[in-house]
Structure formats: C-alpha cells, structure tokens
Image (cartoon, rainbow, N blue to C red; front, top):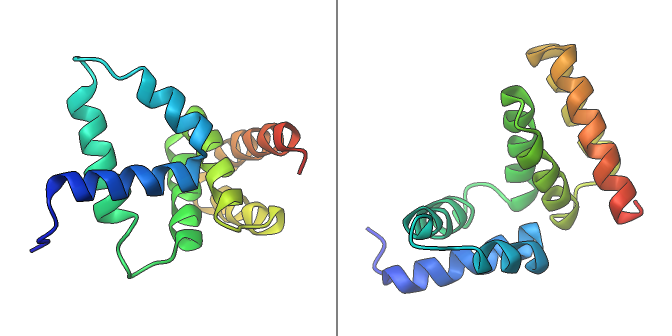
Length: 129
C-alpha cells in the first residue's frame, strides 16, 4: 500500500499533469474547479495523474501512445487533441504519432483514424510542429 499522504499523491499527480499537458492548460483547468467538480478533480490528480501515470511499469512515452490509441478508438476528439499535445511533450515524434494512428486505422477503423489524423494536424499547426 502507498504510504504517501493523499496530499503528496495529489501534488505529485498535479505536477505530472502539468508536465504532460502543459502548465497553462492545467492552470486554466484548475482555476475553473468549483464545488461541483472538486471531487472529480481530486480523483484525476490523485488516481489518474499520480497513481497511474507515475507507476514505474511504463514510461510516459508509452502511456501517451496508449492514450492516443484509446482516445482515438473512443472518438474523444477534445481529449485526443490534449493528449497529442501531451505526447509531443513526452517526446513522441510526429512519425511515432502517425504510426499510432495507422494502427488505429487497422484495429479501430478508418473513420477513427481520419479524425485522429485531423486532430493531430490541428495540434501540430498550433504548436508549429
């Protein structure tokens, strides 16, 4: 069992979230937290961004690749764009992202890959990549 306090796990998760998604995005998101979303944000920062993203079994590049594939399969465009940005922050190249989406085309269908490539191009353009 993890002996770190909940606050330590939350803080470490928030730091990871900021490193992956970008401080500006996370700061804006955190400034919008209210009584309605506070518990969900706590769940995200503690369990998702710390307890999963900071596990030693996979590096951040691999976790980003998995997220790109899963979000593509689910058709979650907003989150996909966010995680294309995160994948770049985690060191994935455009070619590696392309390879993930080619795999998506085979296993999840061409329409899912069409959306994924479009989302990636938007992020690449925004970032000047």
